[in-house]
Length: 168
Image (cartoon, rainbow, N blue to C red):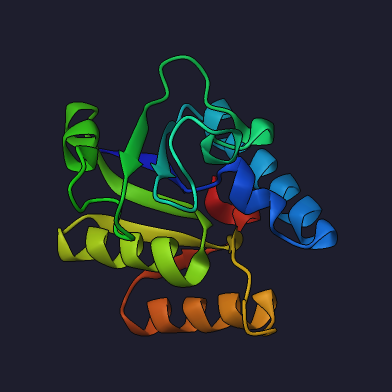
């Protein structure tokens, strides 16, 4: 079995909603992570969320331009926080012999967290790239604080964490 970099919900509308400085650092981290994964032959699978806030086929719904999938890199569309719920993600992973999910993406406290936990419940090996997920707080909280708390909670749940520099 093999590793997969699972890129969760890094869609143009979500990336554009990040504060400019955070957007730049997040996208830079992701582009470096994706480049290292590809250079090592690690497969990538993208997940894309759709709902009333991210309607299908709109510019906001598309995977962010800076990390656009290459030919042959699958995109799994979803409507739930957990990318395994009501999708063919498990089939996509099984068809490629992938059992270790290295997770990055957006919304740290929603879809990244739910997908990592959902994968662990389904007996995948799971590692979250602790500095390659982002979110934003509607209540004026800090992205850094939320990400830190998510990392802490995932670690407490037995999910592995690694930095982007050490992921590949």
